[in-house]
Length: 351
Image 1 (cartoon, rainbow, N blue to C red):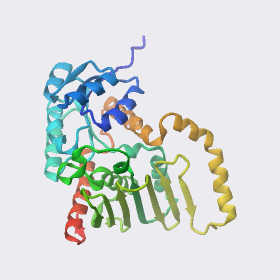
Image 2 (tube, one colour; image 1 turned 180 degrees about the vertical axis):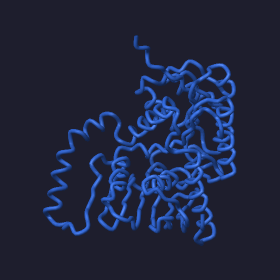
Image 3 (cartoon, rainbow, N blue to C red; image 1 turned 90 degrees about the horizontal axis):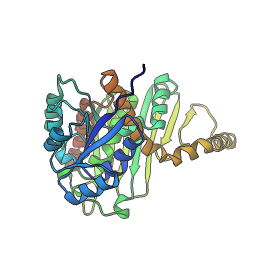
């Protein structure tokens, strides 16, 4: 007789944007998960999100939620300044943990979490959802296949109009609490450089353009351990763009994480004339039905959160370490901190 598949009780810590419009919708779409409890010390935010998602067990403290609700998995979605304090009780209780990026505000906090998780039976994953973006997965396969040849360079752009569209919570304005384009968005692309190319960042040189808050716009260059160079632009005061380009000796690969039909490989020696443009247009037209289906489901960006949770479920059920470990979270944060130091000194910083 086949037994019913197990459902995992999930506890959410934090009632901000990450939980309300990213993780909770993703969890609702997976029948293996059931959100049983939620915690936040902001009573108004707690009641609103809990009401919106019909979550009955509501707590102001993480410890109380762990003791009474006994979730199998906990997602820590509070601002980075509270990550260590919120995650340590979860690790000590032996629960599976998904913790949002950036892992902490400093390397000491990362090391505290790594020590707490060491030797435990639970699985721990950092919330680098872009690793599970459909186009990123395809790009990783292309790079691994050798089609690009030896990698020469990688370039990132993630710009956002978020500061024009909405009033952000105060913690988003200062590095001291994990705000700014480096902590909030650059950390994702630093992780993607490591994930896609299988190498480490060894040096960063950064400059910023900011008027009122920290790191409103940052441009930087970097060196990677595999010999490649990197460049990036991150901003919270421009139009929406989230792109990657990888340049190899056999060709160039480009993708936009906001456009379903954007993955494009151009081999060395191909002619960028009318014939090439017509081929690309034909490909885009053929992709429209699939694109419509993807957009109806929230788009690739939102679906990356579903992929992230599905990957975490597989890791838990197979008792294998998930991608995006605490060590990966530490490495990406190290790059952020190096960029901040470079902004302050005007000099390159070696990691």
